[in-house]
Amino acid sequence: MRILLTSTSFFDTPGTHKDKLYSLGFEIDYIPGPVKEKILIPIISKYDGIICGDDEITKNVISNGVKGKLKVISKYGIGLDKIDIEFAKEINLKICNTPGVNHITVSEHILALLFAYYKNIHKEYVFTKSGNWTRLIGHEIFNKKIGILGFGRIGKETAKRAKALGLKCYIFDPYAKTSKKYIFCNSLKDLVKEIEILVLTLPLNNETKGIIDENLISNSTQKLVIVNTSRALIVNQNSLISLLEKNKISAYLTDVMDEEPMRKNDPLTKFDNVIITPHIGSRTFQSVERQGLMAVKNLIQNL
Image (tube, rainbow, N blue to C red; front, side, top):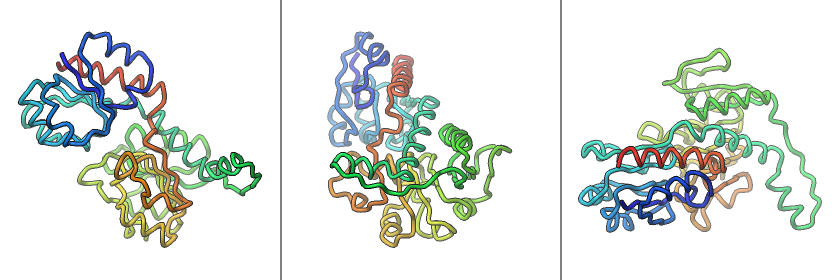
């Protein structure tokens, strides 16, 4: 059998997930992703399965794949927004992902971004590396009001850690069960009114695309710090630039961009109150191994 691997995290990270895949005796081709539709269309039919990242697996890609050998798409990771799920269901092509394996490391990354921003670590690193001893004044995160939009696994882990650090946790998720541990808001508008930090831990779909915009943020009583480790397009990108230019938010801390790898001279890079990491929220040895093993297991079970 012939397998296409496009996940750079899977490929770059040593561990039992790689050992398992390469021990199966499959012919494995690696193309570093995210892979564009135009590259996948002419080659996808040659493969029995694919372990993918955030590649453009469109209707045309899937259609060409099933004309040939393609039997399964095994997503390394959780988000399926880059895959035409509805068309795959129509033709009974198996799509798998890896839920429940990266929530710890992503929640840690959210806190890492917050600490970096409030303690000026990203700026101080640059100063000291250049031989300067510039001592900025930071802020505690203790007792701040943090709002978590989306209360799935990552949202729950983030809330648990935030509460342990002394933050006051506000939650909005119309599909989640409430808990006495946290304050649940009746609407997104109510959530942004109460908080200082807004953390996005929800999937990208038709309901959530562009849900964070200038109109929503105008309801906030504070200049928010927005943390996004989900998908860039949950935030209206034009609104985001406008909010930053008008100084209507304190900061935007993100692990995801609307185009990845990031464009050179992306407009977000001109703002000092924006921290960007290159989609590494779940890129730890432990998390990669867990996700990788599940992706391989899903592949094997459906070939």
